[in-house]
Amino acid sequence: MSSLDAIDRQLLAILQSDVSLSIEELAERVGLTKTPCWRRIQKLEKSGIIRRKVALLDAEVLGLPVSVFAQVKANQHSAEWADSFAHTMADLPEVVECYRLAGDYDYILRIVVSDVAAYDQFYKKLIAHAGIADVASTFAMEQIKSTTELPIPTGE
Amino acid sequence: MSSLDAIDRQLLAILQSDVSLSIEELAERVGLTKTPCWRRIQKLEKSGIIRRKVALLDAEVLGLPVSVFAQVKANQHSAEWADSFAHTMADLPEVVECYRLAGDYDYILRIVVSDVAAYDQFYKKLIAHAGIADVASTFAMEQIKSTTELPIPTGE
DNA sequence: TCTGAAATCCACTGCAT
DNA sequence: ATGCAGTGGATTTCAGA
Image (tube, rainbow over all chains, first blue to last red; front, side, top):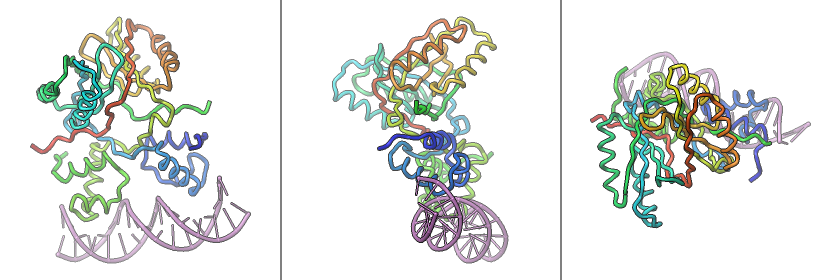
């Protein structure tokens, strides 16, 4: 799959900040007419660079103002355990992020909940999973930045 | 602003997973006709529960496979310093998330880069900011989960 | 490849229930 | 409040450069 030119990158930058613009508006911004602009976007979607188009909701308004980072240590490191842990993460809707780490802790999770009590409930669900040796929870006091916009590399 | 009923929550759940569906399709899924469905979505957008509609890009395909968590300690805690740090975070496109913490470290950042060398470059930019006492970097080995879908609370 | 026009589809409005 | 029908504007396709 061929690489991106400057216009593709421009389109991606715009779309990852706002996908509700019309093709016409988009075409204008990148200096194209509607048809080629539309074709490029189709191609970007087919290629998978554009994974999906989603609505971002306001966690505060939804009543979910609390983010907690939980760092997890496993007491075993078999492929089976890792797999079962990954499935557990997928099944817990409060877990919005989970990364396996190279460090002291094995995983870091970000959990989104309504309040401290809800986190405690989540915590109990989490440690119910067999093989978890340690969980260190850190509450976020303030969201300084949170974006889905990736820093698109320039074509050197 | 009045609270959400079951249909609103259903709509939000669908839209935060896919915003490209037609009103007709959406209406069908929640058991409404197009007009009331459209009106509800308008209301959800006006109210701010739907913050924005964006395209999610594939970091791997874009050549950004590396996520790093950086925990930062400040050597001062004035409002001015916090403000200037927040602005720095906003200005660094590699920083996709930044939270102020209640814990040992003052901030946690997730940084998205192409490789280890690129992280080192970022690291130098970061510590150039005055007043940073300590930065602990942890590389993510694997993304287990990363979603923008919030766990929409049920109407009890 | 891009342009421009044609055709089809869908969001949006006004009216009735 | 929901549902239906029509209009305008958008997306998508097609012909030509």
